[in-house]
Length: 345
Image (cartoon, rainbow, N blue to C red):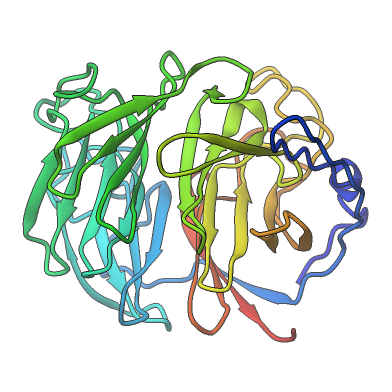
């Protein structure tokens, strides 16, 4: 276990901006606690198959772990291997599916019936994949497609590089679009896939986004959007009414909220300093997973990236938590899964 030698500098001063009507609240907090031990390279693939870039992890209804990885590379284009994988908690592969149907798996969700939803963002070099959200049965049968695979565009018929998908308890479907940062919107559908509405736009203000990258919902039914390029989380009700902005969780690539309203936010892009490839991405903050309370915004724990002082991308983009409190991180640049085992409260 490695704990940061500095209590993550700027992250050590937690600043929350909560906008409710005209009010705003700021408070400070220093976070050093890390009650987890990492297991790097968790999950056993079939012999001869290597891990690809991985940003999608979610918990199955029976407690097993769904992962979507990019076919041993950073794309599934031209590959016939299955990108959607089900593991038990020990990392043993149970089954897989999706070969030839998905180009660039990016976001994942599991609905109340156990169906698996995949946001297939890009389709560079391929037709009939990407720019869509796919619903699969737990056994891998394709049940629904939202958007037109292979065709970028606007709702209701199309999507453009969707980053994540969320299925609410009432069955309604939310999609954040788009990963290419030329568009910025949340798209809402009925449970049967019928288009309902779109809200949000490109920008810096409330209800504006720059790279809306992740979705989660708390027990109150509030929707959390990881507004990555704006270094913040925005919170909305299910009709898209703006509620709050939180900046204390860093630069959010992935968000997971458990049944106790504990929030886990994966920051894979904050950099110790600017660099020629990434520019200044939340400079001074450390990459890692911040854990806190989704009701208050209070941050309690920090799981540092093992390459936190390296400029550029590293660490988990996707995050999920099992019923034992173990944390799973899906890593794009490292091309691996990491499991953090909780050893104390």
